[in-house]
Each structure stands twice: as structure tokens, then as C-alpha cells.
Amino acid sequence: MRTLDDATRLAYLKEMGITLWYQRGVPADDAVPEALPPAESLSQAISPDTSPSETVSPVSFVQADKTPSADVPDTAAWDQLLDEINHCQNCHLCQTRNRIVPGVGDRNADWLFVGEGPGYFEDQQGEPFVGRSGKLLDNMLAGMLLKRGSNVYIANIVKCRASEAGKDRQPTEEESAICMPFLERQIALIKPKIIVALGKTAATALLNTSRENSLSSMRRKIHYYQSGDRQIPLVITYHPSYLLRTPQGKQQAWEDLCMAMETLENSGV
Ligand code: URA
Image 1: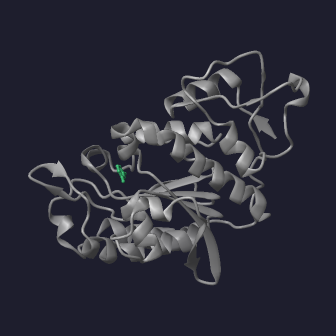
Image 2 (image 1 turned 135 degrees about the vertical axis):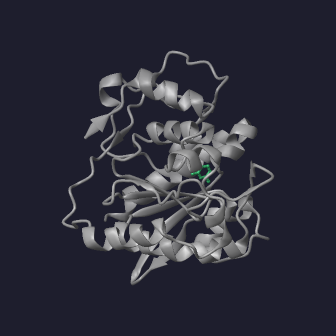
């Protein structure tokens, strides 16, 4: 078991537009639950950034440490896959890319976060989510007691930057479909216990569904991603770039992340 220092967690959650959730009238010593509270109590406990802290006891956020898995990442298969990604010329994005961005993190992670595709900064550095949206993603992870590289893998649907007139753009459905087999192989190797799709491009590509669907119609439910004979729970939330433009969506995003934590907690795997 590990708890996140309250002040640190407050700072991360504040970044998400959320103040600490409170359990009224419970002595602090008793306030550490053995497991995450049920989703309803989590979302009820989310208070807007403006609420006063009052004289209530903060609930420590507790999550079981990852049990070392018997699964040893398949190095040869990873080497083969990364070699293919790094030399990919399957679509025209290879002509304008600076760096390929295969993904980053723990190859044995429980958590897989999937974005859309690299932007300018990711294309420069070869790592996903290193720009402003990456900082927000890191804060979202920290609020969940997670950290880039530790029990978390971060990848994108498309591995090369899509741009137009020097500006980042959404990858087309064709570009996404061409690149998707790489992510499918990454998922088969990582065997995550839960996938969080960040935004509509990721959600629709992972679910092989139409981009006509609105993100709000896809949120707030557990989907499943089929990887071989495994059904991996998939939760959909807003893309961090959207949240930077629309901070009022952060509370809903936090509810999605709480649902994902609850799902993993209850999955018993
Ligand atoms: N947006 C994404 O979807 N992915 C990144 O890696 C960076 C920004």
C-alpha cells in the first residue's frame, strides 16, 4: 500500500480543477480506506475548485502497489516491433516526420493511455505527450498515483506527426487505420489491464467505430478492447489538449479516471 502525500495530491488535483474530496466527520486515522471507494462516492466526492475545505478530514488516496507480474516482456518481439515502427513507410506521414514516436513506458504496465498522434514537440523529441498537454496528462496520472514509465505505458494511434501548413492536425481515418496494427501489437505485448482512450480519435480507432459518434455518447461506460482472447476494459475520456482549451471539462475527465480506477480495482486481475 502507498499513499500520496495530501499536499502533493492536492496540487495535482488542483491542476485538474478539482479540490480534495472529503469524508465528513471521520477521524483522520480511520480515514484511510483499504481500497478505493465505489465510483458513486468518488464522483460525489469530487468538488469544484471553488468549494471551501471546511473542518473535514481528508481521505487518503490508497491504491495497491502493482504486484510483480509473472509476465516477462518479450524483448525479441518488442525489438522486432520497434524496428518495424522505426522504419515504417506505410503512409505519407513518413515523408514529413522528424522523429517516430512509438510510445513510452513500462512494458509490463497495468495501465495503457492512448492518444491521437504526436504533435510538434513529440515529433522533435520522439516521446509522446511532452508538450503542454503532456504536462496535464502527467498531472492527471499523478492524481491517480500513477507516473509515466511506472506501471503506465503511453502510446498513440498514429506514430508520426500529422501536420498541415506547419500546424498539427488530426490524423485521417486512413492514416489511423494504417498505423493501428502497430498499436494492436503493442497492446498484445503489454497486456494492460485497462486502457484509457484520450479523445475521440483514440476512442474510435480502438473501438473500430465511426468518428461520427460524439465523445459524450461514448464516455461514462466501460467498453472492451479485444486483444487476442483477452477483453480489456476501455474507458474513454477527453484529450488533454481539449481540457487545456476547455478547463471546465476537467471534472468530468476526473470522473472518467475514477471510473477507470474503480474498474481496475474491481476486476480482480
Ligand atoms: N497529443 C497526442 O494525442 N499525443 C501526443 O503524443 C501528444 C499530443
